[in-house]
Length: 496
Image (cartoon, rainbow, N blue to C red; front, side, top):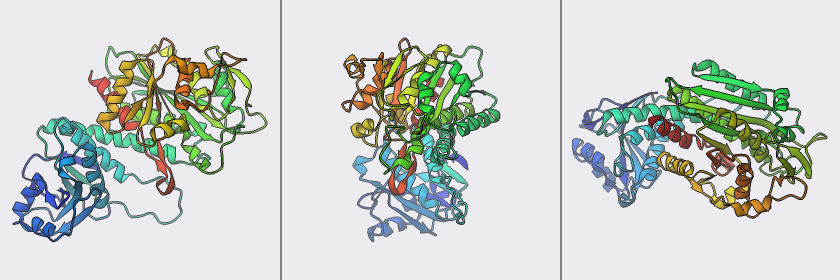
């Protein structure tokens, strides 16, 4: 896909299609008005007939209008003009991109009226165009034997109108990299668990490191994990025939004096049956998505390498399968973490926090600037926030604020939950230093509280993506969240 910008002369642009926004009540925006004037009022006449209402998600393709160079005009609904904001703009372009891919149109110019500059400046306009185009282009990596649909014809997209072309072009380049990283996350998360095993994840990390000179990879097998005394991770994996893997993926950007590393820790449970605390059968197939945190870390390292960010970024992935079996860990078992702290496992389905605890302890050896773990950790977070926001908690408010702001800028939002000392009372155990669950109340918070016991002295934040990483039902599949959030976070750290 070729991306570029346009700044003026919309009616004379030599592209196959102009994409124009129409507000509700069939009202053309400023860009549409300029094209309408060039066509002698043909667009306005069409709208007054009631052929197009301007509702969000609605599109209409019009061909062979006089007075313009483009052979087509695609109208896309913007909703009420008074309610124009980033999300309605994104929805309009997303619907338009999907509609274009159902045609043989090869090039287009995006000419949607946009909100105020503070909401959508030239950089974020370019980034949104490229990101959303990439999302529309993505095709799920299914294993169907039926004939695949023909490839799309779209090859060139121009974004505008741009006040500062350089900022828009930078946004397009970054957006294209974010879209590529999202595809990496989607491809990994969508694979079935009999293909995407802990070993497979390690192989993908190795393949990624071969493609990018800035990346180094180290994979710890079961014997090496045992030498690291990761008793919590091994407790989760011991019921499965699939051996665990601990993946260390490092990006070191160019520069003589890089800042201390950013460590991203991903939960990589490639299938979560719940173990002895077996899950209910409905929806258990979706537990292949329980490695979405690991996929997001690999995606973030992909982006850092592709854009050659002047950062030191370390990805740590604890990859296991959680299965019942004769050797599986049992409720009531006590294990010793890599930190030396003991944990009473009251529920084997609270396994993500166990593997993350050993990974968080491993992060200390890098003397990191910040540590962020990403995990589909708790159903309680879905109950609290639904599927719109990821949960964020941490022991460093500045880091949490950075993530909140990155999510806002990237339209991949998270919401802060409290993390105060009272929640630790729920994790008390009569037999170990603490238990791995604290009851139903505040489940997302007590899970984070558990992780916090392994992060003393670290600047740490936790992203619970259980409600945002994938969709169920007819649209079942990975959403590639929170890759846009992490990308924005890394891009802003690099800019500093």
